[in-house]
Image 1 (cartoon, one colour):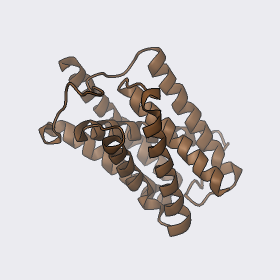
Image 2 (tube, one colour):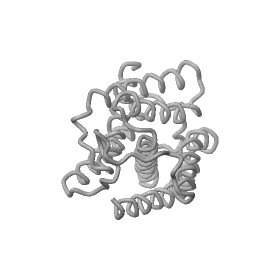
Image 3 (tube, rainbow, N blue to C red):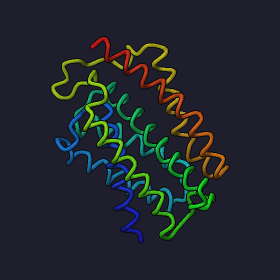
Image 4 (cartoon, one colour):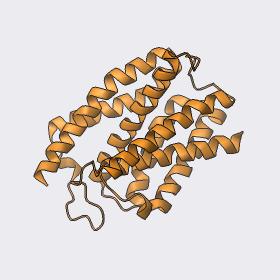
Length: 220
């Protein structure tokens, strides 16, 4: 069961990274080794925090930090670009997961006690459905050539300093961090009601990030 947890957790993060890269039209398979390293580290961290230390509320925060640092040191992505990719991708996948869980609950296919203590095969069904949904969205973005190109890949012809971020962009990034950081805490404390919080706050903030990305795209 522990190995299955780590494997599925790694797949989870790989799907998140695939969605993140496709939003910004980066070639996923070109960086698969570095992405796999990030995914495994995040999955092991999640297992330790949830099942050994017993502090699941810190899981998402640490995972987000691993993703950002992994992009910087493994894929050599500049700080501002790593920040933009990570926050947008993580929030997008969090919204996808929440919508899948909410949909399963509405149709009576999942117990709404969705806290971090669920175990057994029932815990993996919504996870796998979220992964399939994320894969489908990533494929759709790739096939339809949707997404943004202002975040350039190596050799990074356009690199911005994180200190040059406009105030509106900083606000939306900060709100996204709050939602991601608070999401697991809300799930632990409020159960099903946390999904509504994540969905109804995450979607507008994600829309704001996409709008800002569209503005950046028009300048590129």
